[in-house]
Length: 336
Image (cartoon, rainbow, N blue to C red):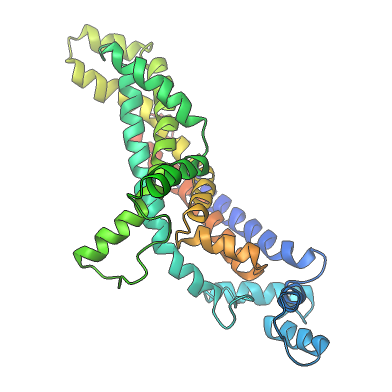
């Protein structure tokens, strides 16, 4: 991997970050009206007393949130605050800070989405490879392929609704929502861990079922393509064992585009997980984003969307750097 490629990718990443931050800043400010006025009007329409002269109150809040300054000055202040890790205050939950709201939900989302994505990707990749392997029993493919096609066509949130109806309402085996029991004090003791796992089971299962089918069908297609390559014929002619051919030749080469697709699909995975969190009222950043949209809390929306964009861009950058480790044929500009 050449230094030129590294610098090019870092420059592209920096450009993506700059554009994302700029768009994230401009969209709520160029929209008709402003978040502060809209939020105070919504508060008043709900019968809540806002107190004092409304116009004076709006101006006071605009000054507090920085909306009384020219746009260019707001932009510079926005960059200054980001450099200090300050995402501003929440309008709906003032004086709570946006960073604190994200920090509260982020561990829940990482735990749910991280575990579910790894399980779905791992199980789906292995199952898909076995589906295309000619020595796998035929009954395996006859059963799994229709199941995979069915589940891959169903969105995460629909699976979540189905699981909620079956295993929480019809058969009350798992809780219907939340991240933990109302009277459970969170800690690293066994009862707390069991309670958290029970609450996360249905949301995680809805993500795993859909993603296993998706990755399984994708891996099956890649395995079918790989089996027609010359190196597979050579491995068989050399008399290598079936297990070695499967893992070292077929699955290894089919896994490369699968890994790239994982990074490219993070946006789809995250958006699906957000809806799952809303359905199960799971206290992650997805549910925080839903509450912010309903409450017109633009600063929280900005912060969460910025975090999601940066996470996806960073994952693509990391994938570009580790791809040569997965496939030595990829040199990125290095002369042979």
